[in-house]
Length: 79
Image (cartoon, rainbow, N blue to C red; front, side, top):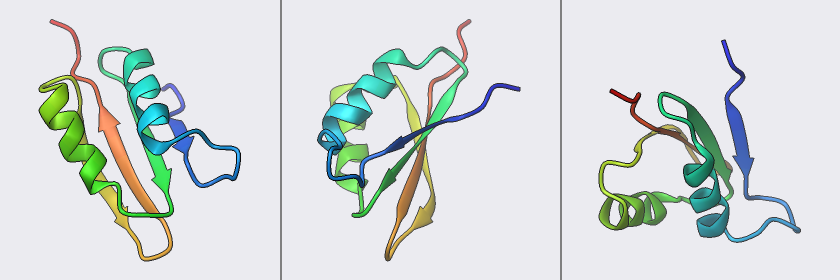
């Protein structure tokens, strides 16, 4: 079983949450997933992905603050 990628946007050198998430979505293989870790609620980013890239990924928030938010993004399997 492959290890799930973690995209952590909390560090001082981290690129913007949107840039990191878009790059991770672009690199995501069909059937794979990654977990976004943020210090703020990324629900706006989730809705933006739904609007701008419909059907590319699904998302589910396994942890919702108040100190840390985690959202699992999954790309549907091919075929």
